[in-house]
Length: 485
Image 1 (cartoon, helix red, strand yellow):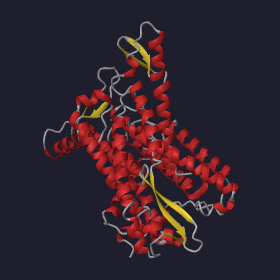
Image 2 (tube, rainbow, N blue to C red):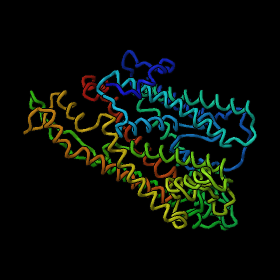
Image 3 (spheres, rainbow, N blue to C red):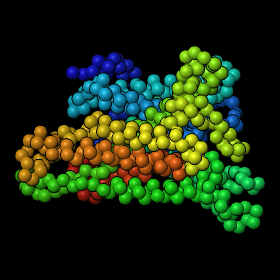
Image 4 (cartoon, helix red, strand yellow):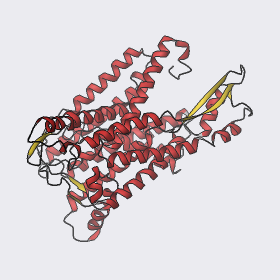
């Protein structure tokens, strides 16, 4: 029976655009062209300023979230992929908590679920745009007309981003738009952190922001110190962060190859094969969902602080203290950077570098525990909602005329056998990914630890997609086996 919650959104789905799947399978070159074309369009949006926004040289309160949300302050992509990921998070929580029940094997219910998620993404775009405007992100006195102009721009841009993601997922491009935008954003942040020419004063000398260039300054300039680029105060990139970035890349690539291979064989031809269950069974999905949750807490806390920080008592005072109070954490570098230091937002924002961990040790411990626990929980929920559970995998094997040697071709028996491995892999993989993301953040990894984790997984997925697509074009008979038809 279709959930009543989903049926509430059914009348509104006619007002949303739907991208139709291509009538025939596109060539690999055509998919590459679509993928890079959409990425280029997104990069253009990141560099087109919003009309009606006054020039502001002040601090960016959402700096910590920009990389993983693939956004840019004051641009058409101000909200980035935030609304899309938040809508997905809400639907995952509703399904995982059994508030709504969806039969994903039913095409009608799956389409209704997807349509509802799209409507929620539009609603979240409106909500976040209004929150930015009312929260003073563009100034306190921009006026009603300018506010409405900004709202319309953010809404249209958000809808375009939603469509770009859908175009890629429907088979015109490769992978997903969200993954593509995150990887591009984090990669740019890493490159900027290594080679940025922006000035960063420290110890009476002006260094380049890029840690590699700052190191060469320390080596070849007598006035500069070689020690400074290794550990810099605040969110300025340093060489310890660069080393943490390299370590995370290496660890994720290695761990992603760890798997259990279950012996299977064709029921008719008795051809032996192996079905792999990876240690990182749900890949980087848990980190994306946890990051979306933390980003929204961060966002709401900043909104309340900007509007109600002067409250001395009452519900406003309680909410501000509960969600978090904000202070300048730049450490006297001259570049003010506000961040939450108390409340829920401070526990869901990673301390950046050893200095902040030493300054806020309790926040660091709570952040670590929350990241690990929530990654494990979301990983476990995801396997049920994404068709990766023991029941789904058992059905897929039997539908492909495969069986496990020594066991009858009974769905319940196969499911019971897979139940030994799949839930455990989901839990442990989720926990591990949470630990790795947290410690990378603690070491000040370039692009944030979570961002690097996501990008590494995304790049590996794209490598596998490219290989599969090329094989399917070379040997078309394998296309069905690879799921590319």
